[in-house]
Amino acid sequence: MGLAMCIGGLFLFGEPSGSSLLGLLLMLGSIALVVLAGLAHRGTTWSLTSDRLIERRDMFASSHQEMELIDVRSIEVSRSLLQRLLGLGTVAVASAASAEFLIIMSDIRDPQHVADTVRQARLKRLA
Image 1 (tube, rainbow, N blue to C red):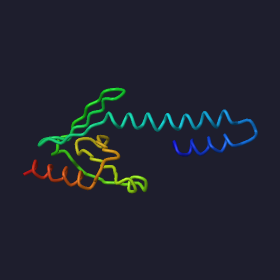
Image 2: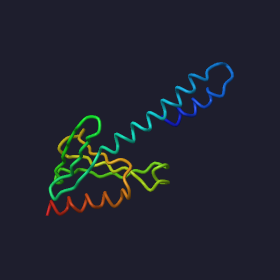
Image 3: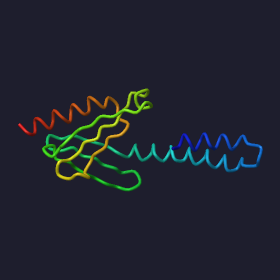
Image 4: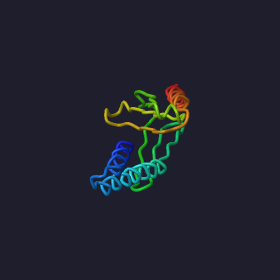
């Protein structure tokens, strides 16, 4: 979305019809969107204990959620084209306790290794 706003802003900025201000605002808005998204992501941490997967978000607002490893229903790894180029990916861990309960680890390095680590921890917990 930020990229589309920036491209639209560049297009309008170059137009002679007087829409330069709108183009500039769109470009500045896209930059602000990217910066805010980056700041929000930096405030998110994940940790794995022998019993649970823990997510903490502490940038703008604070939230903390935990998922018991025995409740892990599925682990999904996905990588967009940009993530693949940057060596990143997303790991989504779904809980059997609730259909809506997910822990999503976005833009992490070596997502397949992270998914395998969670799987192994779950198997140890079940044993």
